[in-house]
Amino acid sequence: MLIRHKRRSDVASSEITPEGVYLNRRKFIQTSGLIAGSMMLGGPAAEAAVMPGAGKKFADVKPGFSKLGENDTPAPLDAVVTYNNFYEFGTNKSDPADNAGPFKPLPWTVKVDGMCAKPGEIGFEDLIKPHALEERIYRMRCVEAWSMVIPWVGFPLGDLIKRFEPLGSAKYIRFETVVRPTEMVGQRSRNILPWPYVEGLRLDEAMHPLAIMAVGLYGQPLLGQNGAPIRLVVPWKYGFKGIKSIVRISFTDIEPKNTWQIMIPGEYGFYANVNPKVDHPRWTQGSERRIGGSGLSALLEPRRPTLMFNGYEEEVAQLYSGMDLRRNY
Ligand code: MTE
Image (cartoon, rainbow, N blue to C red; front, side, top):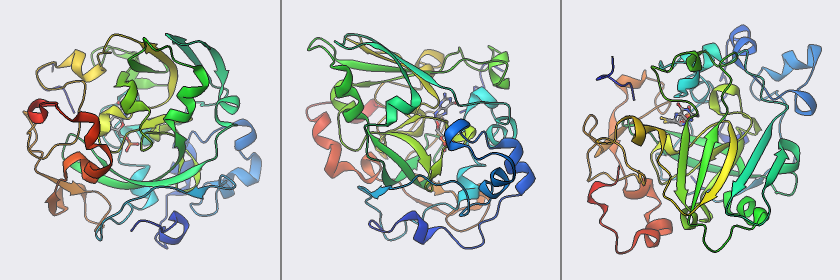
């Protein structure tokens, strides 16, 4: 998303993690940003935690909704944690993994405000404690026309929302990413994006059971590069809606503008539903390259057709009945 003008459904991830997935251990230690404190193992145990498959895992993650097609193979862990978009750490795909080392995701607090009966500040542990964690293996389709299948660990966003009791007048939800220029090298430049990164959903979209707050992937806590400690995942929308490292949630009656809409209004809109029939000015949306599917480098991956609502049409289309979907990137 560089700004050129300005300069199989019920399979658990433990069963599909490809054998031999291997991360360069040193690099992983440098870049992991693994959740500290109670979830972080210290000393020698921390070294064990860097080996995929041998790392600290969430206990008791139940299989949740995952609707995979025959060719939807989850990307190997090393692809999921090294091919990222997280401009707070730089604009190249490898920058987030290379630069997330100094980022400390715990302790973490999320502020909830706006049109709700129970606003307040809530610590990460209290935020997730009441929720049963589920594995949701979702396709993620980036507007840049690549995609990945990722086994997230999380819980429904709607269940979180209910705890704050939004008022009847609240129609939208807005999210903000943390601003920590000392830990996030990309934030030291305002030429990249105006910080904080912001995103929004209509409240009924946010309440849809497929929208989740993710706290992990492949059974393990999120790494810095993937949005530790908590991020949004909305599988029927382009990946940029999946705001990372959330510190603020606000209920509002005004449609929130998202970061990319503010930056390039002619290219990005509020809804950003995956739609193969509506091309982005810079990327055709009719097909996509699947990262990590074949082991080839991203640009060599064969293209495959993009599905309406990223393959979740049956589940979410009713949210948009009566809407003109011809220009909704
Ligand atoms: N959230 C923040 N705060 N900053 C970002 O740059 N990039 C978005 C989204 N969330 C981004 C963000 C984009 S463009 C995509 S495609 C996804 O994160 C990528 O998520 P992943 O790197 O975990 O695969």
